[in-house]
Image (cartoon, rainbow, N blue to C red; front, side, top):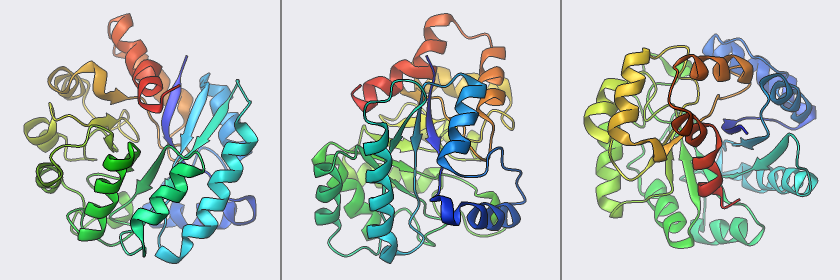
Length: 271
């Protein structure tokens, strides 16, 4: 079984425009057209059974439309067993009534939310993010954040670096359902090894395998623990099949590989 914990899809009417914009901004090469059907085809190529889709609010005003799309995805796939999608919600640090919005998401069956400090132009220690994280902790919801460098913002201040995350965790008194995207912090993996590995949080592997040195990946895995790593690709920005192949090439013990590919995700998602 394979669960991809970090993917993206867009409503069909804006998918191509959005993919074109993001491709230009980050100089990337998408592996799908950004639609639900495109993700399903990528899942078939990579033999993935479940994909978690993570919407990003670039403006607080997008909450209603993004939430509607997320609920529609979950309703469409609620009884699907092969190539199933599970959508999280999105939150923005400038949303009004953060607690109320988070409760609405939970009441509608949404298991967690995505935040993206770079796309939201806000540092992770902002009070709005603290309220999102604290509310999620209180409601037993998951929060996934982009961490580290974003290729669309090269040269700008990193909005979610490891040291800042560590301070946020200290303020929260810990948060075990906090998922740090891109293996703790994209392109800041030595800082992850020093500052975050071993903390009671999850790392997902989105947009990591093609860049990180195998030895460094295994050092972080060893220090952080095999129970707190989630296989993820960032599809469409990586192809699921390619990242599955890279992880398998690391020749991890079968029981460790199974935890990364699906067991840890199943436990976190409660499925």
